[in-house]
Length: 269
Image (cartoon, rainbow, N blue to C red; front, side, top):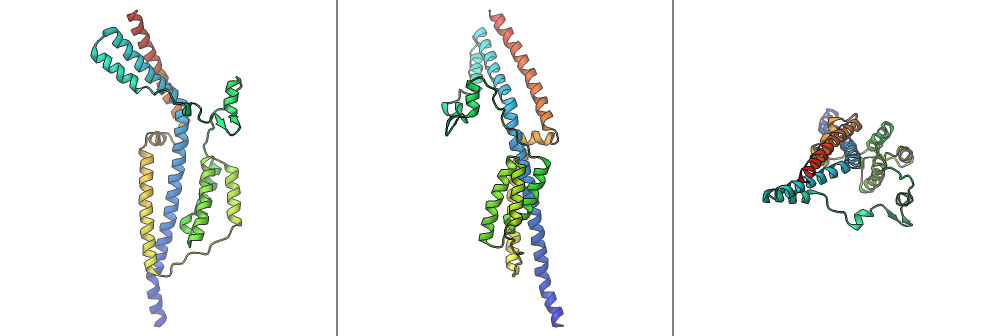
């Protein structure tokens, strides 16, 4: 009877422990999904800016020129006001720091800057999109080394430092480095399985996990509701094609604006 009573007393803590473990794994999977999408949004944003940024700038400049030509033709105060507003929307001339951003390194001019000044081919902006294998390695590493699986502060610090390197390698799409990190973790110390001893600790752990998930949910929502995130959700499997379609639309708008400006300048002459 004593043993049966002991098993009955242990059962609630065992259920709590299972709940904590399930919540931990669910949180880790959620963090992986959020981080994966964050990297995709960041990479797509970079490509979007590189490919379409000049077109948006050209459209703003054409809008300003059209408004200015119309104001010069009519002399209407309202047209003048609209021209001033359109000109104010055009991106200002960048400062010296922006102009020379990434052009200087410890040895002076960067290789890209030197190539440009000597009419040599310039290396195109680095395209980063983690491969399927890199994604697989990243997920495996995060599942194994996640800081939330640490038993104590020392182990958590070790895992925090390691995961920061994993995230950096994944952000660069560095598959070979992810392999090295996988080998490093496999060769490192293996922490003992965490076994909470009191139900209060388990309840506190569940509460922390729930708060962490709420925070991640906010991050995920912000990513999905951002302009780039919404665009990426439209074509997650072929974002390059989406960029091409947007570029075609912008080019058509540029042509239409140029024709409109030519008409205004021609009628003014």
